[in-house]
Length: 181
Image (cartoon, rainbow, N blue to C red; front, side, top):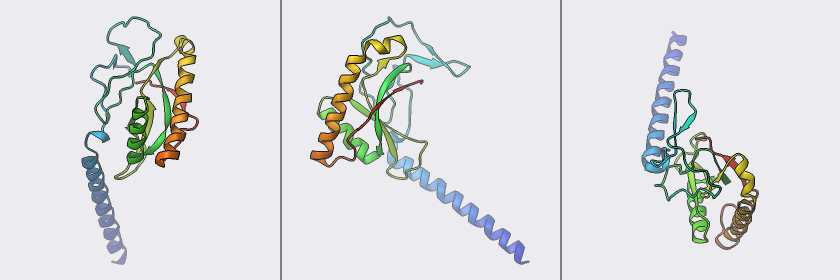
């Protein structure tokens, strides 16, 4: 009888935990609203095919100038597949928003994306990127000067943000990541 009672107790605890977890996730998603969801940019240049890889919608002319995504609504990922973006770090939603605002006020366009792969409750972790993307492949080398200038500018602003605004990061050692889509 004791074992049956213990079994029922374990089942009840599991059910209560599951309901509470779902409720907490739903509350977090409601509070984040559009910030918590990722959407493909409407003006995207690629769509996934049946094999999971991206196919271009239209053959765009080859150009070596960097891609500068338009200001996207909060929560959308404005990156273009096949372009490299400067990853600045991961901060909480509150700190990421403050960091992006600081960068924008100082002439560097940036955005953040909620990192759904990590937990975070009401203040989830967000990945911060500079908005200026650079084409991958052989064209990546052609933009070395512009890329190095962007890195220097971000590092300078990171130090300034930490010193003057008590920012959560100095954006030290940013690195390039290829967005695969």
